[in-house]
Length: 232
Image (cartoon, rainbow, N blue to C red):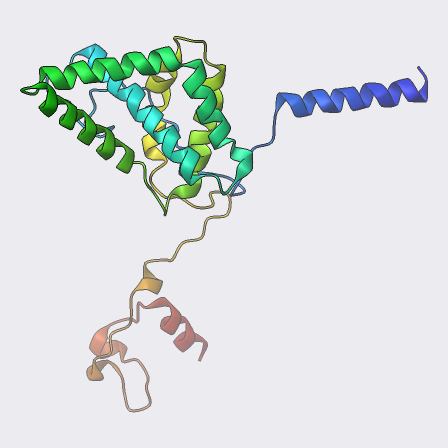
């Protein structure tokens, strides 16, 4: 095989590897793992509770929750273009428009059924939508939320039409978990409990030379000063 053909083969293989694992925004050396078990929509910690909702209505609420989250991400995560938050969300609206419309229609019927009058039902639906959106507004957990929604948005555009709800069921709990802030996981740094406390400053615990009195107050337990006293 000629040198040119070898170089071409190596270059082609490298392109193939790159295509198989596209680069994504990475804010930490190792991000927190937010993955969790699938959910059904009946859990009280996933979204707003819909009293008396049927199984189909609960799944519709899940779908609408995910849509809201990806919508918020499209607005909130534009600071990192490689997340593709806007493009993925727009693709979602096109690829899964039938499922999204079905979810909205199901929710609309639920609120019409559980409220007296069309106007009351519409107001309840509007409140549900507004409150759902507000639950995904985050600042402290922005990195984790943006990374997670980017991953879900990418999977959504590859999900077959009619299969978006399956993705929602599998990853909604992971999405909610991402609203809890976490930092670097590879090299975590913590403020130890001892460093967050302070030593006893009672006069009886110190002599005139500023030395700690074990007999009166016991062994010094505040780490920085205890270490300094031992060294001194």
